[in-house]
Length: 186
Image (cartoon, rainbow, N blue to C red):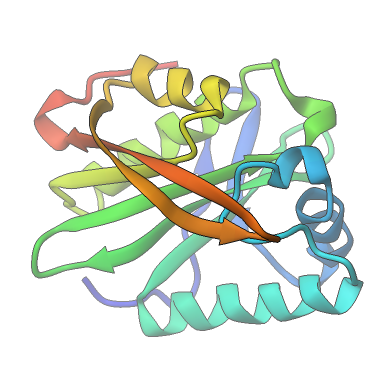
């Protein structure tokens, strides 16, 4: 699996998963500085715009070196980034990766996360020929656990006290999905 110069745009009925660029920094900051969005993440919310600028540089570096591919979730209506979805810890030898996703809290409960993940998973198992995907979710994040379960992910175990974020210990529920198990459309 070669690292792409740019990510392909992945269209869905209401969204476009697209490569992020400098014009998206304000949207990235809005998403990743929101305590509600970051409640169950493995790091604290951004506090400065500079953190969002660094994050965009890290996203570009990950694409370049093939360690992670992160798309902006943009609405077809105005091309504004309302979230991101990621393939991280990419391992071409074992044909596996982890998924990550975040959606702006003002856009929750509209099905955008599900729509974006279906496109991401289809791309991972299709064009990238991955065999296995994993999701690491704080088990208290019931909505996220339910989302991946509706897409066919199975709970494979729990890692206790895996993360410590701003003094709080967090567990990880580890979910897995095999390519042969995925059969979702919009």
